Amino acid sequence: MTDPEAQSQIVLWAVNVTMALTVLGLVLSFVRLIRGPSLPDRVVSVDLITVLAVAIAGLLAITHTEPDFLDIAVALALVAFLATVAFAWYAERINELHNRGERPTERTEETDGR
Image 1 (spheres, rainbow, N blue to C red):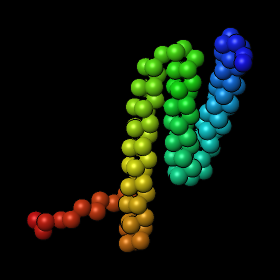
Image 2: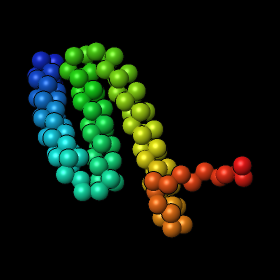
Image 3: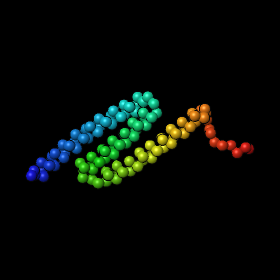
């Protein structure tokens, strides 16, 4: 068996490597966010950024032995999920408007005849 000090060093090394790769993923996601070219590309990059932020919060919880970071990760994941659902609703609505031949910027509320 290995001693706890060696195990601690291995975990610390693994967390540092994972943190570096996660930050690299964040940088590449920001590049995709800026370059686009379409709205779905940007939404996917924002979703990936939030997933990577959740991963960073988890890694910080491991590094600092502070479980409060996990609360932040859960809250961020819930907000990211709601944002993804909102975008899906928006994309479906835009698709319906295009299928009806209307412009997406027009108001499509029903009038009551007044």
